[in-house]
Image 1: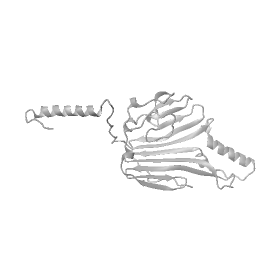
Image 2: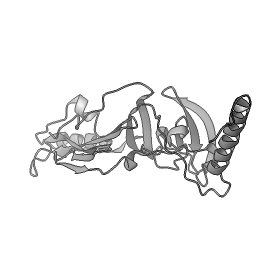
Image 3: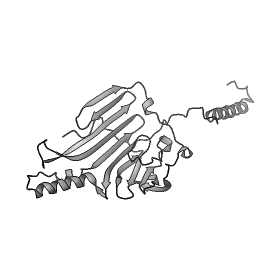
Image 4: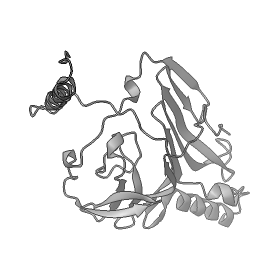
Length: 264
C-alpha cells in the first residue's frame, strides 16, 4: 500500500486501511459461500470422563444377566466364583475419556463384561475388558486394542487431521422428529436437551460451537470430536443412560501416551 506524504499521510493511510479491511471482509463473507472458513487456532484444553450403560427395563442389562447366572449356578450346587463387588459394579459399563487440546486428540474407550475363566470353567467368573486407545498428533496416529494389547503406530503427514472449524448456531439442524432444545447445565457446562419421539432425552454440549462441536446429535450418545452428549436417559427404561463424571474446558492436563489399563 502506497501512502501520501505528510500532512495527508495519516488520514489517507487510515482511509486506505479501512477500505482494505472492508474489502477483505467482503471477500471472506461472500454470499455465494464459496470461501473456506478459517481453521480454529485457539481451542482450549478439553477433558471428558463419562460412562454409558445399556438399560433393559430400567436396569443395567449385562449386570442383571451376570447376577442371574450367579444365582442359577449357586442354586444348582455348582462351585461358583463370583466377581468382587468392585468388578461386578463395572459389568455392563462403558467408560469414555477424551483429551483434546488442539495439538493432540486422545481417546480411550473401555467396556467391561462378565466372562468365564476358561471354556470349561462354567460358573467361574472373571471380569473381561474390551476397548481401544487412540492418539492423533500432527506427526503420528497410535491405536491400541485394550483386549489384546496390540498396538499400531502410523506416521501423519500434516496437521489436517486436527483441524477444526467453528459452527454457527443457525447452521445446525434439529434432529428430525425431536423436540427442543431446552437449555440446561450438566457437569457445570451448558447443553441443549433434545427429546426423541420415544421420549429419550439427550443433553448435548452447546458451549463448543466456536471449536467445531455441534449441539445436535440425534440419538447417537457416544462422544466424538464433533459433539458431546453430556447426559442421556431412555424414555421407557430401555436404551442408553449416559452420565458425565468430569468435564473441563480450559484446564491444563497431561494426556496419557498409552492406555491407562492393560488386559487382564
